[in-house]
Image (cartoon, rainbow, N blue to C red; front, side, top):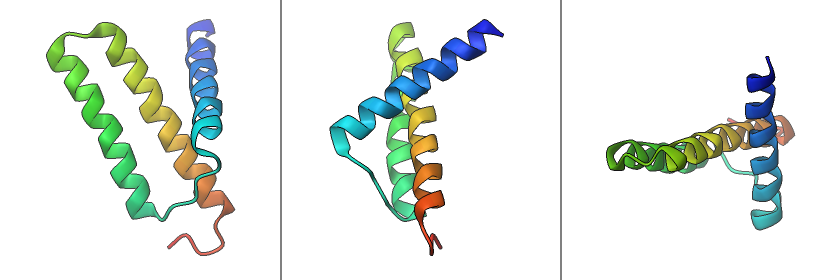
Length: 80
């Protein structure tokens, strides 16, 4: 259980860092997919480069971007 909590803490910290860097982001679902796929590509690059630290960091970013997309969706009155 503590490992899961640590992972969720990492995602929360990354979400706060994203908000500090970019401010509140409100995009349509297609743009969120572009952002998410760019992050997934960075996970793939870390795998192919054998970068274990980068792999973990990029997965946290993927999760944080997915959370940001959900937050944006929740704020939107006409997400679709």
